[in-house]
Image 1: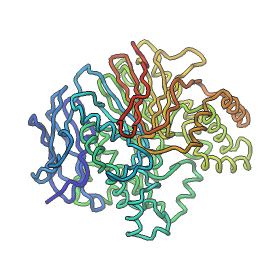
Image 2: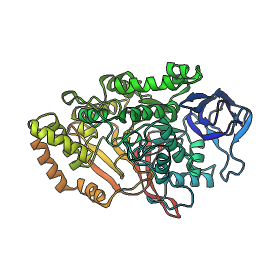
Image 3: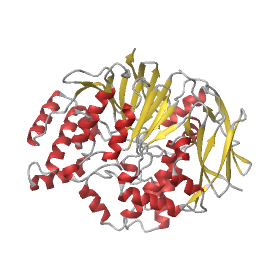
Image 4: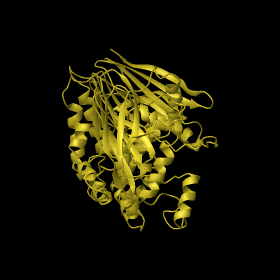
Length: 542
């Protein structure tokens, strides 16, 4: 008898359809049956001895909340008979309804129930408990997880024990994951958390990777990649990371139409063992990044979301350095400017913040100038060492890409059909803040903001807290100008100021988008108190 190993995850949902992802213990038929008679079914596909299905659900009615069950070979496997949570349900949006978007990044797996949590309460656990306590109350229409859904390079004690029982942990990559099988342990550990498992079964989710989904500072520079490829363990790691991301995260990001048009997905479902197909795809994605697109677009009524890959699509040659390859950059531009006037809010999800504390931004721009040889080869070698040691690889470390994204956001937010807001949603930096743009010339008609929120469940050393606070100060700006002058770097094409934060803790931001108004709420997870509101503000009120 087939068992439900992981899931269900409610991934895509629109007014009439949805997709539900599951992992089963063996090949089987997976089915979703909804209380209103709608549903769908799919056969599992196999990758590296594991069995998965992405079940399409059709026949849903707009503006409804429909409980569902999951069956494997006609045996009910979800919800569990002893579940303390309400039934999982698919909530479909109604035309013209408000859109609520929760987002955050950087979630280290919570320890098993009852064990001490070294990084404090999990914000996703707090969100799950609140929704479970009031199933008819407010819940996000979508949960955006903006990177570091798993930590392949910072494993738990339990995972390291499993590694030691399987291979020699004294051999590289040591206590980090080495292959696809060990990646499956990370997802199991992270998504089997009871609160998170139920939350992901009833709130649609969109995901994008960041570095720790593969390794810290993934694709920092061409020299970094060369060093990693010279090791004897990196190839299995990168291929397994991309394979597992495609299976566990990327597939669920896609709409049913996109899935139907995906030749790899069709081939995977049409073979008894898709391991070779998915591995070949990962090999191509690593060797020819421009041949694969991880970015995607979702529209929620009059809210447009662009989830942008700011890791795998990089061009790393120093004199051509770019956050996005030309094809990816053209796609982002096309999607942002498509059908002007058809959306009231443009959300750009990118794991790495566009706008950083000023000192950090200027240091990254200076470092990029050194590394491309602006001050000669000795400074270039020094710059590469600093880049890796200080994690200087955000948008500011790709100055041309920073300027290009800035111009695009201004263009998308300008004109008689401009949206009310252009909001860049990011994580990565283990604190939260709001930064508002100030333009040297005519400002866009839309309000253009950077909204950064992390971690969902992790920690930040005291030294980094002090550093990030200082990075926004007037003194820090003065130091940053000195960096710019030494690197012979121009001023950024936009200025910005912090209007909220920095906030430190395990936290989530929530946007409520109603017509042309946008409201932001930041909540932190507190021991014994669930999610507690830290701040609320109106971003737009038109």
